Image 1 (cartoon, rainbow, N blue to C red):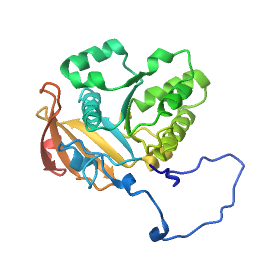
Image 2: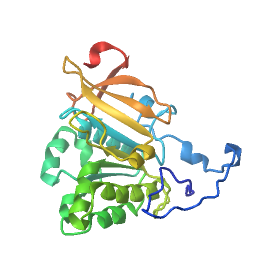
Image 3: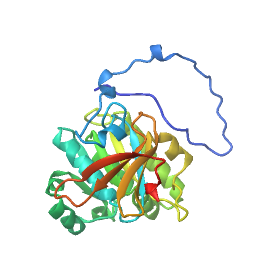
Image 4: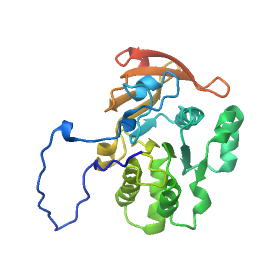
Length: 267
């Protein structure tokens, strides 16, 4: 697959240095791309219609997932990742929080998770986490789940010092490189990023993070204890409805039914 060279997001700024750019205006008919880049990676379930208008995760995209504590963010996204793997896609789970013992419970309930390749960042506390991440991603993957983005950033701050914003920028540089297929397999990697929210429930992330996101998904409980997911932003045109799901089934998330976002069952 060909490498995409279009840059996304805002360039980093250097204090006291202002660069003069020569703007280039062009039309989309001048843009050349590999058509495979716009072929979806479906899992064959209802979540596909929310991920994109084409039905499935799109290559080289970045989705952030936030939600209520205990709503099942990790479980749901691992389920999507495992289903993508079963369709022949090359996947990776980057765990910044859990260790192998923590994963035992997940695998007991969802045996298919045992086949998903996992990078346990906690195994490398004496190593540079940014190098560990970049070296691992160098192999090239279709889709990577990171749980959580903030935990990886904290590990980088612990190793290198500096601010969370600087650590976030370093991670985003790595993600953008692999979005553009700069890896050994020349794959335009898509990332699913579990991210934290503030105490007020607002998204925690820099402007660059927000600009690099293709979609922003929210996972919540309603007043009756039901669980649902919806997108407040999706540049790839997926359904903007609430999709309810259940974690009561063995080995699969139960994708149930959709409701319009404005229905009162959310609260």
